[in-house]
Image 1 (cartoon, rainbow, N blue to C red):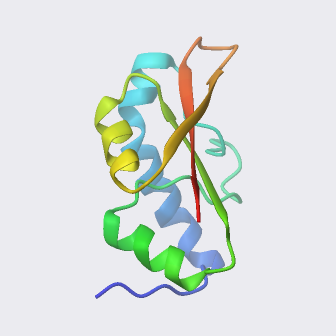
Image 2: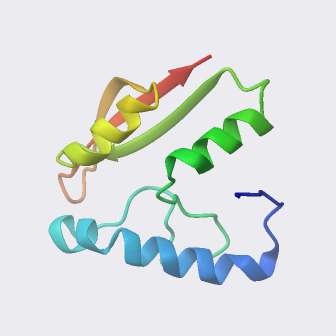
Length: 110
């Protein structure tokens, strides 16, 4: 069973390290981490790879949210299929000027 709780300040280092490991292949390929991972500033919650159950729990916990948005690397077709299977639709593209990495923007509306 998955339960959610408010993040505590002491949770940030562990979540940060998990995100760095998760996105290491992107860093090795493009030389940058995804947006919101601040290598020098661990005060921001980094993006996390979420499973189907976690996304479902989050959506149920926040029923008033009508639009969910995320960004993912353009060449990660596995993630595209995963997000699309959850009802997300590609709505745009972005390009990191520093690395040239292209990403897709996905949205899910309820």
